[in-house]
Image (cartoon, rainbow, N blue to C red):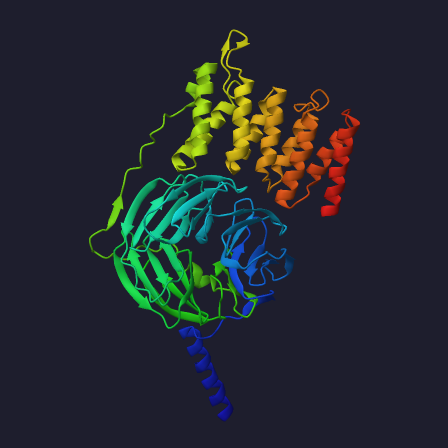
Length: 536
């Protein structure tokens, strides 16, 4: 029958589109912005997706497509880069090289001018340390509140900065790709771990470089070309696409490839070959992202953020399969032993046994090293030493009979003050722990001040701890009048930075207001509490 033949023909056509991947994926949702989308990022603690658009705003959307907030307008044109830190702060930068930090409420919490334009990055470590490369091929490193920690210059042109193991502090790695094909891997202190030479695909002009690394090898894409390599850096295959690449996204044994026409392709990293399946999506203007629920987010050139649900069978099809035979070409990888730390290794045992004069000497030397700002090893060694000095006599007491013989509050106080300047997110955890045991009121004041300087409190644990220590009279605000103004100032700074007014922060201010402190301090507490209500 004619109708039957028509239905049969349609079925065959439908099957052809499905098997060849030419049937496009329908978006789950789409959310318009105020301009062409140039960068995407996803939240860690919230079901949100962030889009930086050419209207110079960040747009936050839930993963179901509902709009949450829009940031204030940045004062100048922004570059196509946005990254989320472990405390949910967002980092973006302008065309002139100004780096901005934006809290989860969409407010700019700090900005800092870089020396020249920011060419690559930023990327962020699990402790909140920010890395980026400027136009002079200099790797610049700042903590989560924007303070310069150290910098390192290179005599070759850097064309890519990438991060690996972003959620594992001990395994975090930086990768720098140079224009001559050298790919070097650094630890968080900038120490070179190993390198390899890649035969890069040729590029007709300068453009962004995309890197996708798996256990069995890697992909490097630039413009219309992509080259695959084995784990030692030996090239395997070269692919030439009809359109320039927009991004590479790795997950569960597959690398998803999106070109600028909106065609989504898949590379099997285990079998080391391209799959025949592909999907036309939308024309992208930003590098795509993929979340753990297989939602694929694309920032469109039509000013819209799109969410697509990838087939689960494709995302998980390669998990657990063995590696295919590798190329037998000679390895080009050069593994190097970690550089020895030239400085003296300071241990908790040495600190606990040292006398006051020796500790002062160690402290002064640490200050000198931190102020040089030219070596990552010195910075990491310095922070570890400061933590040991800040806890001397408290976290590692030494006694003769009942007498404590290594109680040096003036040394602890100076070390705590420096942690408040140069510390990272790990320093907040250390200072919070120290606050539970510190008995000297002057050092307590410095600890609270340092926590206020470092500000970050994404989970509310810090505000909760400050309230608990105040209620337990570990922080005796009536006995020590200097504690209250520092508590008020610090809880205000912490709340502003985090973008969240927590009930524990308000309760801490009420605790001060209803205490026996001076009238001026009680008024200061209630005025800060009133400003909280205005911020909600």
